[in-house]
Length: 118
Image 1 (cartoon, rainbow, N blue to C red):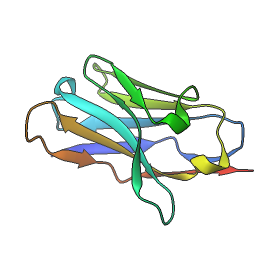
Image 2: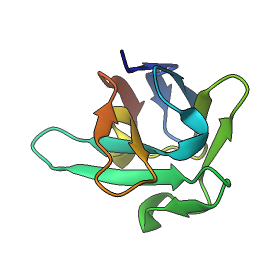
Image 3: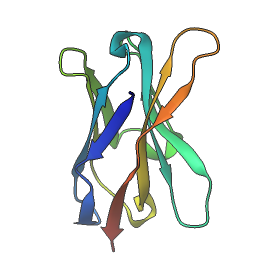
């Protein structure tokens, strides 16, 4: 059974920092691209950052220079360090996993709320 469990969200003032964690189980972690998405109220779910098994990273333009994604293969975890947070970063953040093979299924966590106050 695949599980992606997020933690670390909460309320922070603008300019502050938060670190999100995603613990994965039930997948071949070293063969999955891991990512963080976010969805603000009334908006679509958008990619925030992703990291390949080889630790190549990709970021949304809106978070470049402020957010850092990392992964630990031994612990099967993915982290998102968020610095210089802005009110527009307020959203539910989702951890996702997708295998590197053709036709791989997407897996999602339940999401965790990040609220940035002005």
